[in-house]
Amino acid sequence: MGGKQSFPVVKLPKERIVVITGANTGIGYEAAKWVAMMGATVIMACRSKERAEKAMQKIREEFQVEKEKRTPVICDTESLSLEFMELDLSSFKSVRGFIEAYKSSGRALHVLVCNAGVALVPFTRTEDGFEVMLQVNYLSHFIITAHLLPIMRKSGEDCRIVLVSSDAHRSCNFDLTKINYSGDPEKFGRWDYYGRSKLYQIMQMHCMHRRLKEFNISVNSLHPGLVDTEISRSFQDYRLMTRLNGIAKSFGLMKTPIDGALPIINAVVNPDLKGVGGVYFKNLEGGYSTTEARDKTKQEALWKKTLELLKNEILEDQIQGREGKM
Ligand SMILES: NC(=O)c1ccc[n+]([C@@H]2O[C@H](COP(=O)([O-])OP(=O)(O)OC[C@H]3O[C@@H](n4cnc5c(N)ncnc54)[C@H](OP(=O)(O)O)[C@@H]3O)[C@@H](O)[C@H]2O)c1
Image 1 (cartoon, rainbow, N blue to C red):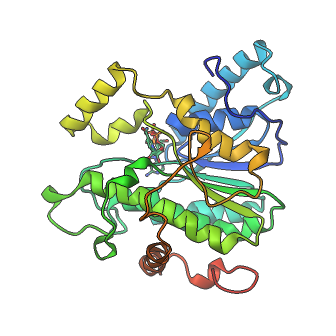
Image 2: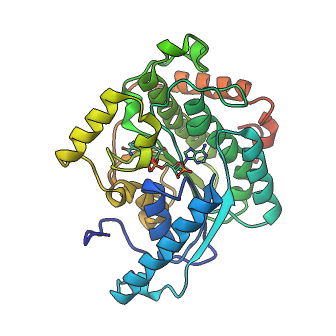
């Protein structure tokens, strides 16, 4: 990890199961690698088996290097427990398949990291009729968290949900009447709708934190910083953004993927965060999201709207807690 080791490196048991979406590249890859090297079982939920297998191979090679360096804790891990599960967040059919496969495996779930994402994509509608950033970044992850909550509730103490958001939530409009863009594709605000999808993740975190307080599950969200990853694939046609990206890179303003992954790894493994929820992390510290993101009335309006949009995917009674509806 480039000599810097600023997240806690803890020995994790193989029985601790961590699911990370979009773990084949970028910050998800680094998080999967370090959490697996600490000993946990990591399930890489990715849309391409081929890319996930290549990533697993690379992780195994990098693990050998750490072993040879005798990196503390990591060198005690005998072998990696890494698995692939197929998940395409732009398709509810695939999301359902993933949930069913997970449920029928009968295994526990201790940590769910909703990391996969796309940014600044030109207007695209999915096969389910939703704008793609809304579906991939927010709605599909919402469905997965909701359906896997009952498994987490039964998985013992200290279960965690980590929602990878972004400071891009600072520059967007909160307008639930236009949550699913249906206007002129040429007038589609990519920044606005990317920011919205990330704002919703922070609001979801607050709603879930309120509902899960009495349970064994904590929910946090985070901003990884401006990170040099493959995220720019989504906006290759957006000249201004690709130029700004290039400038940021050449002035050394972008983090490396491992530095971007620090808040994720910390949220997954830090023993001091047991039971800590409702925090928007920046680096390793709690940071501030916007006043809007922290507005309880708006958060609850989003929750209601989300359940309306997803009425064919989740019924409120499917995400019941011990004493009633979430
Ligand atoms: N990079 C930044 O500066 C930055 C800043 C703030 C927040 N973030 C957030 O950080 C997260 C990770 O981004 P990154 O920078 O690591 O980007 P990345 O390198 O492009 O990785 C994104 C991951 O998401 C996966 N993904 C995309 N669409 C998917 C779909 N439909 N179904 C399943 N997986 C899908 C990708 O899989 P494929 O390889 O198969 O496409 C990839 O594994 C995102 O949520 C992003 O919004 C990034």
